[in-house]
Picture 1 (cartoon, rainbow, N blue to C red):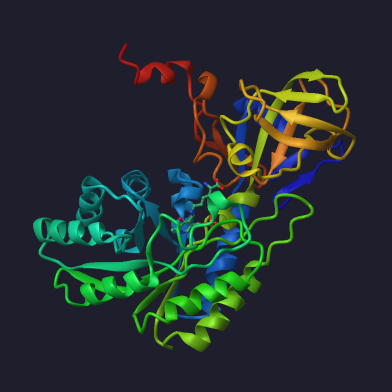
Picture 2 (cartoon, rainbow, N blue to C red):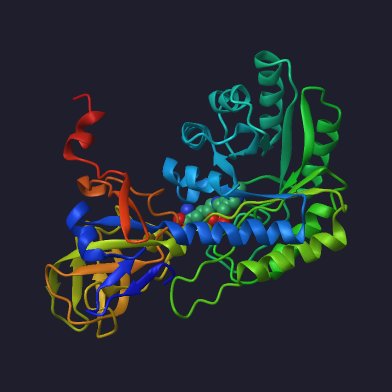
Length: 411
Ligand code: LLP
């Protein structure tokens, strides 16, 4: 995968650092991030979009990897941030992100969260319902004499070919407003003196492997009329396994902007919100093998699992894996975690070269939605996040301790 290479002795390197050195320094499990790979991907997005549609901004869907080091790195690369609610808003601000570049999302934003967003002077708040409109109008009146920029989230009734749980733009989705209601919301907001309707937004889902649905979403937004801003959401798929063939960033941008050029007003501002495709391929999860249990396909059990990677359990995501000191294929194994569920699988039927207890195992393409969804099931301590670059490394999130597990427990 990108950012990794293999030393002469067969050891995996992340950002030029041997994983053996990283395991020694930080223990396992650990989430290793190739910093240059994130930057390179961000530049492809930023430069690629600016070249095709100058009045535009790339807004990172920070739910994919919400830690301050990631916000900071991507802010340096010129990105804004999609924040889903008060927690991500707080993290973004703590990292020094410019509030003007924040796009605040959520289908159930609370009073407190809306207030935080207005007080922080977030650039855009995305309205997901009529309740959202009522509430925000009142809060803006109470909190500030200013007007607040808003977008209306539209459900364009498009169903991309992806897992049901991450398809968000079809009729019946809990997000946004179907076209007739969206028109009503637009009409209402045009008459508001506290909320300034800047435009419309659609996000149709995640891990999308074809470009057609993105083009249809742009067309659906165009059908709502002329606005200053069109936020086209995220959703481009990543290459998890050798068989996956997601469109390239450039092909995806060609489709978006090609369609925009035909149906959107020439002077409009375009925002996009990639999450997964910005960070997935730059992350590698490192584990240690605890036990190998022979059987048809041997079980290779490691010291992590669904506590640090829920993608398999929630979406049936498939991952490759390798023994990190003997990179390459071998006998097909069932790579499983340490948690008390049979569904706690990291990779079913993955070829591993002679796995033994004590070996390091790497699962690549784990940069997106792993840290974000990590949890303490079975008392697991959430792993550290380690940035690697040009042979150097630093922890940007430390491993949880058993003491951390007790911290909120009041007894
Ligand atoms: N914009 C909005 C409003 C979103 O809700 C999302 C993701 C994105 C952008 C970014 O989509 P991406 O480029 O990452 O596909 N928890 C799931 C993923 C859920 C994605 C939810 N929304 C997972 O672990 O796979």
